[in-house]
Length: 421
Image (cartoon, rainbow, N blue to C red; front, side, top):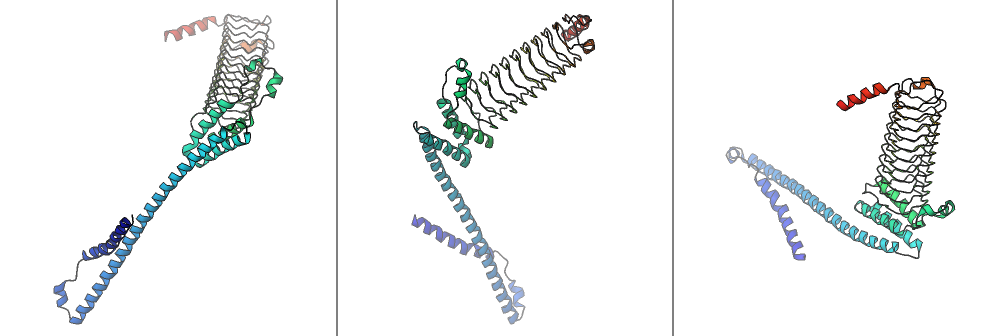
C-alpha cells in the first residue's frame, strides 16, 4: 500500500516537472540568422528575455497542471467519501430497520411499539429509497394487529361506540397519512383491516386499498381518497365530509348514516352501495354510478347528480331539494315520498321510475323523459311543469288533465332513428 502511494507520488512529481517543459519546448525559438546580424549586446539581451519568457511560461503551465491535478484528486476524494458515506448509511439503515422491527414485535409494551413506528417514520424521512418499504411494513402491521371484532352487523350502537383502534394502530395510520402525502409511493393495502373510529382527518390515501375494511365511525374528513378501492368497505356512521373520492370504487360499500356533506364523488362507482340515511348535502356526484344503490331517506339537497347513473336505485323518502339531476339516468328508480322541490331534472331519464307521492314544487322537467313513470299522488305538480317533458305510458296524478301518451309517437320515431343508425 505504501509502495503504491510512493509510486503515485513520484509519477505526479515527474508529470509536474516534465510536461510543462515539453509544452514550452514546442514553442518556436529565436531565428539564429537574424540574431547574428544584431550587435552582440542586443543578442545577449534578446537571449536573456527569451530565457526569462520561457521560464515564466513553464511556471504558469506547471501551476495550471497542478490545479488540474488537485481538482481531479479533490473530485476523487469527494466521490470516495460519498461512496463511503453511502455504505455507512446503508448499514445504518439496515440496523435501524432491524431495530424498528424488533420494537414492533414487543407484545407487552405499547411504548416500545410506538418507538418502532416513529423510528420507521424517521427512516422514511431520511432515505427516499426506504419510503415504500416503510409504508409496506406499517400497513402489514396494521392488517395483522388491528383488533378483530367479528361481524359488526351483530353489534349494537353502544357496543360500536366502545370500539376504537388501539393507540399503536392509530399512530401507524397517522405516520402513513403523513408519509403518503409527502412522498410518491406505491398503493397502500388496508384490505380487511379493522380501523373502527380511527382518526384519518386530511389523510392522503389516494389509490389505497380499503376493500372489505371496517371503517365504522372513522373520521376521514377532507381525506384524499381519489381512485381508492373501498369495495365492500363498512363505513357505518363514518365522517367523509369534504373528502375527495373522485373515481373511487365504493361498490357494495356500507355508508349507512355516513356524513358525506360536500364530498366529491365525481365519476365514483357506488353500484349497490348502502347509503340509507346518509347526509350528502352539496355533495358532487357528477357522473357517478349509483345503479341499484340504497338511498332510502338520504339527504341530497343541493347535491350535483348531473350525468349520474341511478338505474334501479331506491330513493324512497330522500331529500333532493335544489339538487341537480340534469341528464341523469333514473330509469326504474324508486322515489316514493321523496322531495324534489326546486330540483333541476332537465334531460333526466325517469323511464319506468316510481315517482308516487313525490313533492315537485318548482321542479324543472324540461326535456325530461317520463315514459312509463308513475307520478300518481305527486304533490305541487302543475301542468305547465310538464309541457316540455316526454309523456308516454305515464301514470299522472288525477288533478292533471294531460294526455299520458302525448309523446309516444315522437319517442317511437326517435327510437327507430337510433336503431337504423
